[in-house]
Structures are given as structure tokens and as C-alpha cells.
Length: 429
Ligand SMILES: C[S@@+](CC[C@H](N)C(=O)[O-])C[C@H]1O[C@@H](n2cnc3c(N)ncnc32)[C@H](O)[C@@H]1O
Image 1 (cartoon, protein in one colour):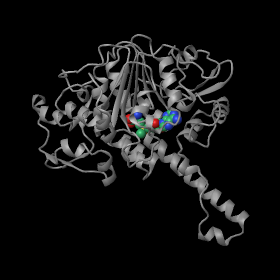
Image 2 (cartoon, rainbow, N blue to C red):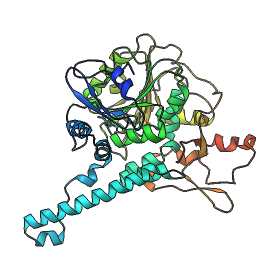
Image 3 (cartoon, protein in one colour):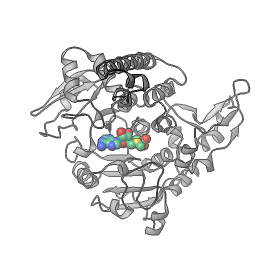
Image 4 (cartoon, rainbow, N blue to C red):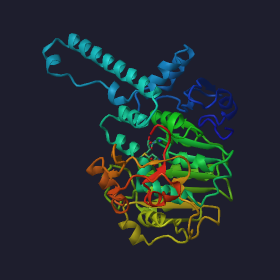
């Protein structure tokens, strides 16, 4: 973990981190010349004050850890803000004097949070089918992130990222999944990495905890606000991947400068996949800029391509064609685009047939978009919502409506693999 440095003073945090560990029961405090950073359930929180998008400070978590309250520190971090934010007063409250009604609603909120945390503890210890899906649902409630992170493994965005990562020499050099979310792509990267480290960076502690404890436990995770730079040593990272995220970052120029600083000179690669741009109106609000704006962020040889053909080629078991950029006109009409910037000359070319499907690497399970009939075992496609279909247009084309039961003979599984109906999934999904 020698790659990790403090963004404030530049001190290396790696050796302290190696002592604390990155396993789900590792708790501790990192110290550098300028700050103290908490490590909770193996995830360092490299924020000097408020956690990004949260009404919670790193100092509060340090205080809990110093008092030996490790479990409470974890519970405070995973409790979503939608639960802790002050609630509007209801009709009965409005009839009461304000001191009484404030007390009443504070009590209600405390009870709700306690109930939520009890259930979280139950779900965090649960195993078996749907255990991970229940955790995601508990955290997001009915918010759109729940659907997104439950079905992430089945989306064209996932296949596009797998395709673009497939030509990289992931067996060598340190790897970072920037804005890794729940670690869905990180999981593939950890399958391909051998002894080289894979880091996942994100602002959302719950998602990092999920990645570390359930989805890709051999990764190392950091809770970081990307708007404040990357806590990584100069020239230390060989492969950087970022899927479905740059359009949500305001400081894109800072991001570009940080990538140039952190990538290994002469051999590093940046892959930005599932990128929205401002010439296409997406369902999800974002801070996208025009394709040419993204192209100017990093000063490295690069290509930018429309993402649908990457997915279409993937379904033919073909790697991406990165020999040349698509035309500005094609990019501006494409709902999603991908950018690959690299010092490695082997990357920017037309990658032919893949030896195996990237989604085949790991632990095969049935794509969660399918319901399996309890008696016959046959599979039927079940869309979670209209919004999900709109966000994942390409899916409609390649997933069959129904399929016969899985054959016992493993040599007969190819039709299920070819349609991404069988995919690599974590245990307890
Ligand atoms: C749509 S999700 C994509 C997650 C993952 N890369 C994937 O493809 O599923 C966007 C991610 O960016 C993260 N994110 C947004 N703004 C961030 C910031 N300023 N710093 C770090 N992470 C951020 C969010 O927490 C979220 O996990």
C-alpha cells in the first residue's frame, strides 16, 4: 500500500495502513504531519473535515475510535443521510407547542435510526441468496441508486467497462478504480491482478464497505473526495479506470492534472467508460461537458469512441476497436462514450477476438435480471423499472425474454454465457 499519500502534507500512509490492515475488522487511526485519518472496517477515510455529501465529520469518527467505539463508528458511517436529516413536522406536530413537537420528532428519528441500524447489523451478518441485494435495498430504500447497484453486473455499462479493461496488462503494476462505487468493476480488476494491488476510491463509505466486505474483498478501498485530488504518489499507478463517474465530477481539469501526475510515465493507461456528454440529454442529472472538452483533459495519446459499438462487439466476443476515434458527429449523437488515454502503444489498436468472456472470470451465477421458476427452473427476464430500461437501452437488444433451465452438463452452458445470462457474481448475491 506504498502508493497512498496524504493529500495535505504528502506523507506516505502506506506502512501505517499495512499495519492496520484492510480487512473488514480492521479499525485504527492514521497519523501524518498534518492530520489524523480514521480507518473503519478496513477503509481509510482520507478527509480532513466533513465527509463528502455527508453531515458527518472525520473528526467525529476519530473521536469514536479513540473511545474504543469501533462498531458505533461503522454504524454512523453507514447510516444514510436521508435517515438522519431533519424531517418536516407532520400534522400532529404542528398542533403542539414547538419545544414539545421538536422533542417528539427527535425521539421518533432516534427510534427510526436505531431500528435501521439493528436491521443493518442483521443484514450485514446474513448469508445466502439475495443477502447483498437486501443490504443495498436497506441502504438506498426506494432511491434510484438501489436499482443501479443491485443490477450493476448486468448492464451494458458493465460489459463496456469489462471490454475496455480486457486489453490492459492488469497482471502488472498498481491499479485504481476511481469512483468505484460498490466495487463491481473492481471485482474484475482483482480477478486479473496477481500480486499487484487494486485500489477502489469513492466518496460513499457504505459502497466502499460493501465492496470491501462483499463484492471485491481483495481490493483496498479509500474514502476520498475526488474534488480534492487523488491521495496517490506521483507516477505510481499503471492502470486507472473510471466508469460512469467523470460526468458527476465538477473539477474535471483538476482530475486531468491528477491523472497525469499519478500515472506511471511511459506505460500508464487511463480508461474512462460510460461517460455522458453535454450534447445528449440523459435521464440522470449530471455535470457533463462536450466530448472535445473531455479529450483536452489529459495530454497523452488517446481515442474517444461511441460506447454502443463497444458493447455490440463485446457480445460478439470481440475486444474494443481503439485504433481511431469516432467522428465528432458520431460522438455527439452517442448517448454514452468512452475515452482511453495511454502511454502504452499496445492499447490503442483494434483488439480482436477475446479468448474468454471477461464476465466468465470468477464465480458464475444467474444474471439477477432473471427470475428462476421454482419448479421448472426456467428463466424469465424481469425488468426492475421503466427508468432502468431507459438508462440501459442496449440491454433490450441482447437479453432473451426467457430461457430453458440451466443444463447440468457444464459444457452446454455456452448459450447462457454468450447472452450474459450467466455472469461472474459474488457469493450471497
Ligand atoms: C454512478 S456511480 C458509478 C460507480 C461505479 N464506477 C460503477 O460504474 O458502477 C458514481 C460514483 O461516483 C462517486 N462519486 C461522485 N462524486 C464523487 C466525488 N467527488 N469523490 C469521490 N467519489 C465520487 C459516487 O459515490 C458513486 O459511487
